[in-house]
Amino acid sequence: MKVYLTTFSILTILFVTSCTRYITPPVTGQNNIGYIPRPFYQDSSSSKIYISGGYQTATSTNGHLNFYMGNLNISRGHSFKNINFGYGLFGSFGKAVYKDSITKTNNYPNSKPIANFNKNLNNIGIRTTLGYHAISDNGKTTFRFINWESAFSIENGDYADYRSDLYKSNISDSPVRIYVTNQRNFLTTGLSTEVIKREAFDIKDLEISFRFFFGNTFNFNNSYRNIGRGSSEINKKGGCVVASYFVKYKKIFTSIELGTDVNYGAKLLLGYRF
Image (cartoon, rainbow, N blue to C red; front, side, top):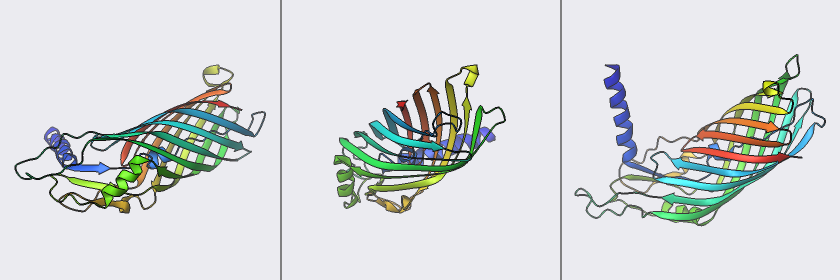
């Protein structure tokens, strides 16, 4: 019975999402929020500057819309006895690619689905983090129990303009529901927890950390409009979840981030600490 129920649930999800299209922004909560490195309290300096660049990608729920972006970041991190904080600037540039095989049907002979597109995009933003931490007795592990993280970004480019125009349109004879948001400014905030290991695997200059973030992008769900057929209700929320893995050896570092909200996203960065 459990197998049948699971199969039915999967088929139901596939059926529902196949009848819906989401024209989403590229930098929603899971890409808006990004890891801000901070030094160990025991480091030679309590303040450090970090510069990084890399690649990030995201895809909408049904996979018809994909984003491919380059990413640049500069930030400054501070650590004191029990408090750490950081702030920085970031920017992304790339393209949004939409591919859909919807065609006219017997039920909707005059349907006008969205044409496939490939449009440029870019965004700029700021990030901040403030947290409380404790250090293990041997001084090699830092527990950042709770951090308050926030990010604000502004989206520009052809894709943002296209969404704004699409938002004003009506495709009442479309065979699917089409949800579009014209939102360009994104404020994401939430809480994270992190554990950092110094001299990992007994390697003197190796540092690794794991971080988990949960937060929300304000007014995100309410910004959608259904320009296609059917119900105007939307079950997408502004909540986002992000998991990060950070590795630093001497002054070179890399980070991997995976996240989900209205999009599924991934980010890979390589950077240098000054």
